[in-house]
Image (tube, rainbow, N blue to C red; front, side):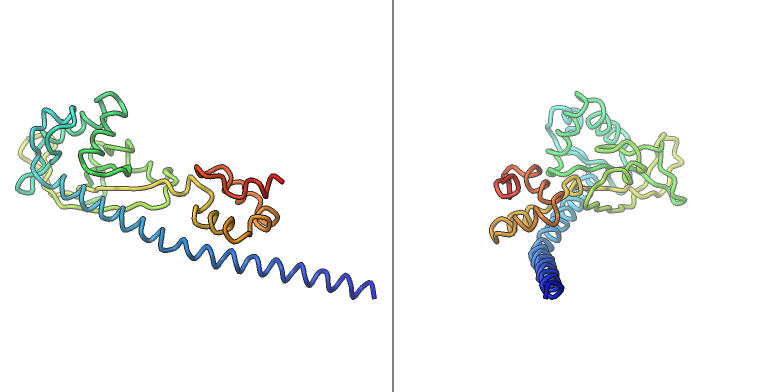
Length: 224
């Protein structure tokens, strides 16, 4: 009789665990459209930034003051004066602040960078300009979504008349993976009274719901 009782108790616990996992999976699916929407936003930002950079610059001497229009290319050719003023803005103007000015002028709240890449994959000056210093840092960003757009330009970096056709690579990213949790899942756990199960079965995730968002989710339940 006792064996049967133990077996039944184990069975009930197993069903509860499976049920909880199924419900958590179901509510997590709600987060898929949110991520897809974020990718669409990043893609639009990357396209907008690349289009602006592929156009002529306006009043480049005032870019450091957030005035004019950032642009690097005219008739398919990179203008080195515009490029130098852009690099001065993102790298030298009140370090950090100039980069924020550039983001505002390019109409994005996301981080971005550009670099120039030759036919053999070589990166000119081994440098990227914007939110990273060189392309290799992309692997260390811990970003959830990275959008990359290649635009073909003629680039004569030293004005010696012997330029070449290269890719101007525009990258835009967000830092979604800095958070362990999804806001939608945390909200659903609280609104569907699943916080207790979340605290019991996935305590690290529950802790993330408590600490990673402006609103504390599942705080009273987990701390109770």
